[in-house]
Length: 277
Image (cartoon, rainbow, N blue to C red; front, side):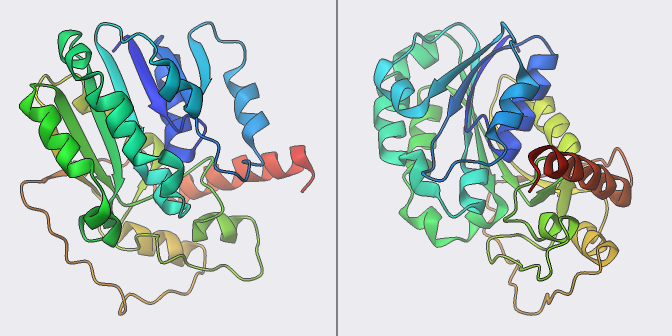
């Protein structure tokens, strides 16, 4: 991959994708989506990218309006996952994204062999947001026009830069009362670096596909929660999903879950000390 556009480039998964691809020498259009409440670590993320000639930051509204030229073999990452976890899907302005970008540029996307990567929360398979979304219709239309579309369904993701909406972050930040969001999937978890590598394995494939990503470690989320001495209740959660033709893709763990959590702890402590929160 030589070139990518990442919607939500400063979000958790989006930023990790961005850093990985920059390390690989890719050109990145990092689309910053303002959610109304600014990320307290936004400046830290900008500093981490630094003055990289391969990185070009754009505001989302500007990107939607300017219709920047689509180049050969561009991969577009559409990051629903991070905004779902923050209960802020409206920031993506889905109708405008579909109409102004995907539909208006259909011929160019096809001509220049673009690929579209949708990143969804695993809950999307049964969530009410899916019923109200036009994504499925858009995906089918893209496929009918021979545009490669990959859809990834993600469980809980943890590691450096995990936001405070996740209970692991709260525990590692020594919050007196860690609260589990009803938007956090508790039946599985994947470490962020392993997630990125798993997604990258699929991007070179000509044909698209739909993948439910699952950890190779059974009970991964529960093991993390127990390591952090968190209380949780599985009984009220229903993990029945409408998978259809979605393929299970097992993600190998590059390290023990405790090591991943300790990496997240060290990174978070460094951020907190730097910002003196």
